[in-house]
Length: 117
Image (cartoon, rainbow, N blue to C red; front, side):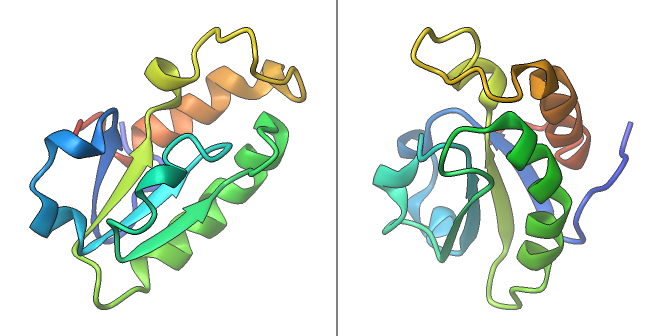
């Protein structure tokens, strides 16, 4: 199932407030279109695959972002915004690269081995 999984424990993230805040404070949060930007002060590192909400941009940035995340020696885990549940079919989501939504989620799912935080 794993295509590219970083050498650090990685999870799909739905709700950061339900997690142990000590664990969260030592995590890298990989976001999409700022969905979890309200939590950037809770994590060790925050990075967005596409601040503009472009699925095309995100799919092209994902592996670089994952490689960057695994080099953070002071981070214990990676939390990746679960775009399937949190973006899904929202009307306000831009259509730029919408055809890449499934491929992006598949790569995220494989990187986390489907584990939810």
